[in-house]
Length: 460
Image (cartoon, rainbow, N blue to C red; front, side):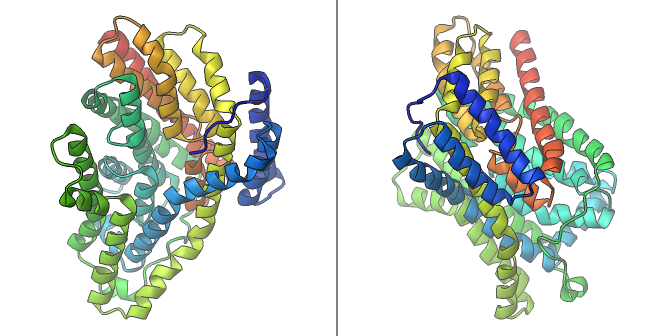
């Protein structure tokens, strides 16, 4: 992460620069139709100059911001797209979609998809989960018709809620540690609040938006070939391929938790090996190789055919990877220029109740720099001294403060958030449509989650 540089401007000027930068970026993309990748780099450079980041350090800030985001996203998106292409083209996604529809019915298909995403989202990160689920979402949308948003928003919202509200994801875990909350209570409240928040803010909202906003299914992951129609894979094979990365990632999470608690020796070889294969990129790599075997070579496809399928998945996602990286660059510049911390420092002394102040600071940091995880951890660090100085806070209060921070870190995903570009490009939406759908949904999720947390803090 790029470390903030001592701000050279007052808080007021920094806030003006942030607002103007976002407006200019939106204008370049929506009005001028400048490619988002180029626009993000250009505006990032202008913001770095405007915030007076030392000239000799601007290049490093830009490159490090891009590289850090790409390091997290590129492997996940590329491997996830390969797995998605193999599932889609060989008919695996259709087999699973047919099974879901038979069990839940056509009308409840969005609910079934979203519920499955909530389960998968427990150990898996937002971007990896979304990429793996996309072929299933596309297949159901093609079969049942209607707007893609009817099926995609409940799934994306489920992964977003689990990523922000529920341990063992890094944001809520780090925030709990900084605030001094018990991880177990944060988990309980995260699920207690997160599930109804998803139902109201993602599932019901997705149904409403789907009726009003038509969106066709893109050909990003391809379509089934002739062999898939006559010889589809078995349901158990498809479930195994989807559950494999989930189980491996959960293994990493479980071993890490046990090692932190001192239950197992972190330096033991078997622990290190288990944590390695459970790292998200490695887990996806194993799943891709397994898919190549089970859906390809074992079923009589030639090596060149399987290689062609895997390679064809990379072209369409290159733009997604680069734009996502550039969004991370923009957020890094905003952080390095001191915009986020300047805003948080101003709000910290207003005198709001702790849980409300935590939410407001988190919202401002989220809007200013984009990353939900950074907003979570930074807000927790800023609010920790206030929490320590406030008497009478119970363990439940501390856990609910973490949830309030998570709510603030979820709202208003926009052009400086890499997740915004991931959703926009994978669903083939314009920036304007993404703002009216994804950004509104994220704001609903964060606000509803905070409202639940605040009410519980009054009652409990």
